[in-house]
Length: 131
Image 1: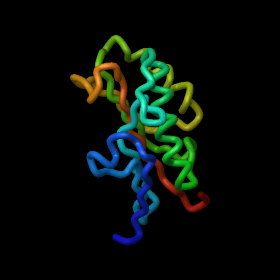
Image 2: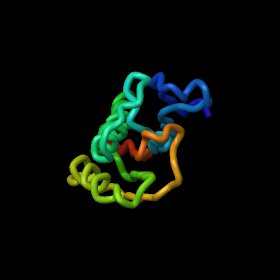
Image 3: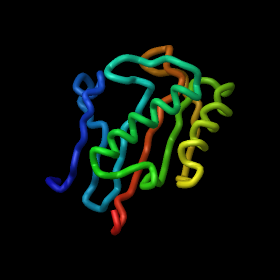
């Protein structure tokens, strides 16, 4: 699969766990791994809204390395640790994607690798003919 492009961002767990931040398939589909509120290798704790924006910014940076942006996003997944955070995470998603309107899911999970993290996001994008 030599036509597969892989992006790494130096995130703290990419090397340790052996994964790429994003993978672009020959058909133009781009899969972005789970992103959290980690900036320059440090967890940036904050409220659920802030963590969501930071996590999507990590995903956008990976897409940017492939020449894509938020307008190319076709699906998002938001994993949260508390039902009480649904509104704030949803508000952040709306601010970022209101015009784009990707397919989206929000799933409540039991936790993440660090207990100060309350949200993790995944993004799928598509490189269309005009991208």
